[in-house]
Image 1 (cartoon, rainbow, N blue to C red):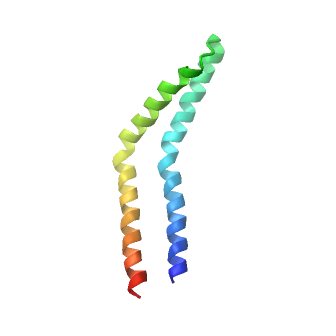
Image 2 (cartoon, helix red, strand yellow):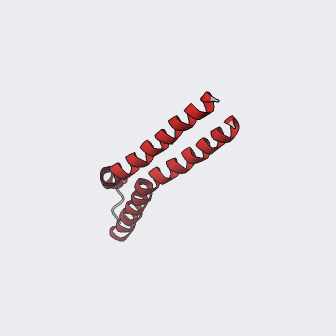
Image 3 (tube, one colour):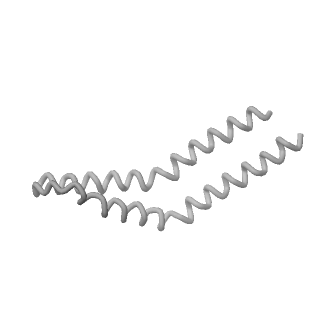
Length: 90
C-alpha cells in the first residue's frame, strides 16, 4: 500500500513537472528559432539578442498561465496530503 502510493505520487509529480514546464520551454524554443532565423537572414550575429525576448516570453507565459498551473500544483499537493493521511493512518 505504501509503496504503491509512493510510486503513484512520484509518477504524478514527474508528469506535473512536464506539464508545468512545457508551455514556457516550448514558447522559448519557438522564440529562439524565430530569432535565429532573423539572425541568419540579416547576418546579425549578436549572442545577447535572444536573451531578452526569451525572458519576456517565459515571464509572460508564466503570468498568463500562472493561475492554471498553480491550481494544478495545489491539486497535486491536496492529493498528496490526503494520501499521506490515509497511508499513515493505517
